[in-house]
Image (cartoon, rainbow, N blue to C red; front, side, top):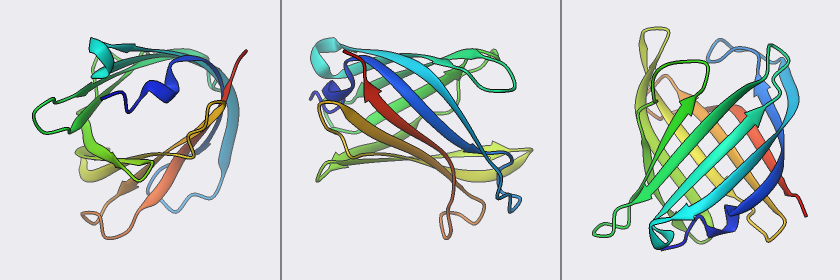
Amino acid sequence: MGDFSFQTGEWRVHHRKLAERLVGATEWIAFSGTCRAVEVLAGEGNVEDMVLDDPSGAYRAAAFRRRDPQTGLWSIWWHDGRSGHVDPPVQGVFEDGVGQFFAEDTLHGRPICVRFIWSDMTPISARWEQAFSADGGGTWETNWMMAFERIG
């Protein structure tokens, strides 16, 4: 329980994302944002509210995380405020201070695997990254990174 307690509070977020995904792109887009996160369900849940100042237009997004008390497996649902749907949950666990979470999804109508990694958590910073695989997890393309810096 409490695996996401490190995230509780207010954060400045430094984003870097690929301009396009799974097409061999090398152009990275950098922008800032903020995040506010709280623990719920006595540490077996976490809610994250983000403001992303993307150059294509600022927007809000949210994540809801829930730990299954029987299995210890976390599920993470992401909702991009620009759309009306919630992405399929990534699922995984923290081991040795690193959280790895996986899901199957689609990108432009083709099946992909999705991976989130949480790492480098300290009282004042944390790192998140997202990668996609078009070959069932054989090779991964990291396409988004967030560096979290605690406010206050």
